[in-house]
Length: 123
Image (cartoon, rainbow, N blue to C red; front, side):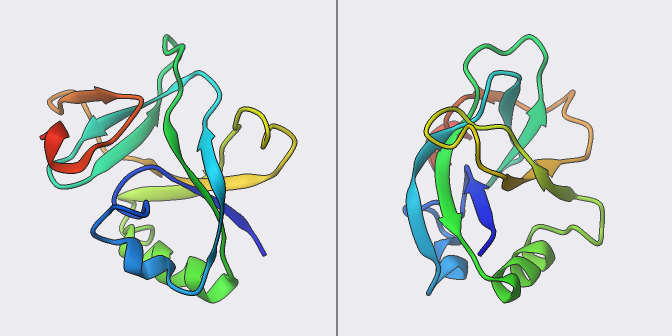
């Protein structure tokens, strides 16, 4: 089963977590440095950030292909809102191939969140 890193509304306490029903939580994780979050209103977007030293916190889930297809639809992959691709994580996932969703639209006017999405606390 593919591994997926989630950092926002799909996390266990997030409003879209039901989309991960019947999937398996592997554990808490953090990306390697070079990534950060921006608030897009009710949800975050993760983007590359060369000057970042903290990375982004989240969870790793083992998901089946049917779940990935549903999540691609939810995340607007076909509309070029997000792109699903590999993301480097810190130990213990450093050697694993893990995918996540990267935000593709401009973030210039969006509030910077940093490493951790806390839902309404970030908006």
